[in-house]
Image 1 (cartoon, rainbow, N blue to C red):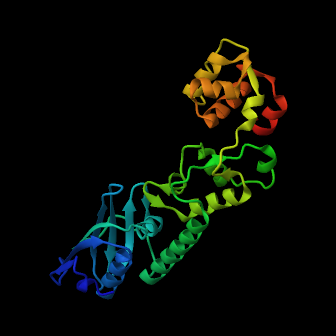
Image 2 (image 1 turned 90 degrees about the horizontal axis):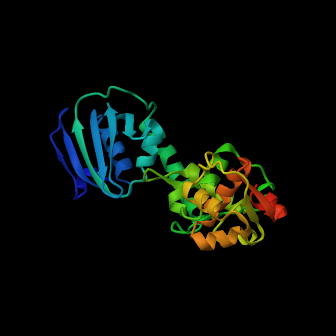
Image 3 (image 1 turned 90 degrees about the vertical axis):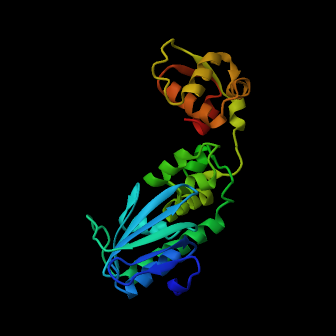
Length: 278
């Protein structure tokens, strides 16, 4: 695409102080990089968007991208993330060189890798539930033990809490990340993450407070406090969730930590506890 022909942008000047500005659309950054490479420009490309509010910088020397920065990302990973921006504004200021160089290689190779990642991301998103779908953990130990998870998959799994959506889990600082999408897709395929909440086992587990010491109850302050207030050896976890309005997953996490700390004990439903909570 001819950047100069884009009605939303205008080029000013032809020397080292040349400026280019306009609005950001799908594919604009890739077009800009190719345009600047063709003309062997040197300068600073500033990119901004409103949703979410972010700004980024891309530095070009003799037409090559040498540095990209958008906290907390920098370098090639930052550049690949910027290729996913679909709206915003850009301004290219000619001249000057960056203090850091975090990207090497030809622009063509950089763009090809970025497009490959975009394709991977889109394929994963097609197979995942809708971006707004809220996900829940499968607490059944039999399901979790079918196939071991990597450290990164466990980290993502731990963020599934019955409140976060697919978008929340895959998007980091306003950026859809292919790596997160693929990990989440694998968790969904394994059945350890699902759209439906399965907490039937809470009705069979009864807990009782066995110490007055609550100093270790810091896994989830609200849920831990509610659990301790009702852990009398009579109420099930389902009763406590209904009485207090606590999120069921938060209650599950709290009882696991409180039992491990020796603050509460299971008085009924030990088999359910070992299978679904421990």
